[in-house]
Image (cartoon, rainbow, N blue to C red):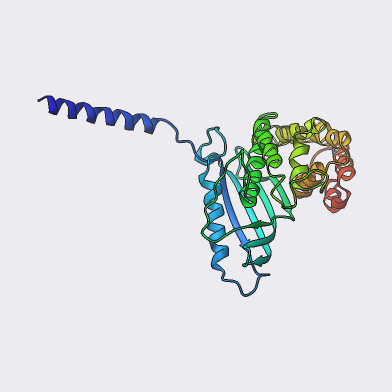
Length: 309
């Protein structure tokens, strides 16, 4: 009898625990990453090494929880890494590559997806031995490939958080900066200050620069107050975008003219910005936006001209 009661008690407890777990939303990883490896420039190499690299990177990025934040499955940040291998030395497992990294963000109450970050890393070089497992230790950065993927994980999550809350990504961006500092002795290009105004150090250092705080504010004002608002009220949302460009983007550029963040941002937002204003808004508003964007990135003037139409 005692045995029967004990078994019944255990069964009831297991049911209660199961129901409790079902009632608690499951936390998902922050990123949903797609890796594309283009190895067309490399001849005479067993392609299985590139297939294994793709599989290893997707598993590393997608199965790891990078922060303590609770992301739901439908909140995962959509990202892509298009890695072009220009040289592969099988004798020392060295990959010489460039990579195009992009992250996207849904616009609320719409089917539209906007680009949150897009930039080319021209020094995406690393060593990788087929079937190697990647292990991440934030305090001890001793592997270039792990450092590269960890850097972009933190950078993208930080920018995404900024787009939902003013300066919301500060802690994660600081972790990205700490990773850069810990990667100084890896012996690969892209981690050092003054090495390149567009390298990995320069990008995250500028995000955390007090002079570029308006650029951080731009992420919230443009996406949350602008694009998200446009889904329910086009005029109000566009007005908020106009204000964000004047008060945040222009101010950031004025505060630190040598920073490339405003230029990089306008490079990948050019078509979207043109579509926001083309045939819409007052002539005064369109001319004001044109002047701001042309002053920051004259190379994209073909797109800025569409704003005035």
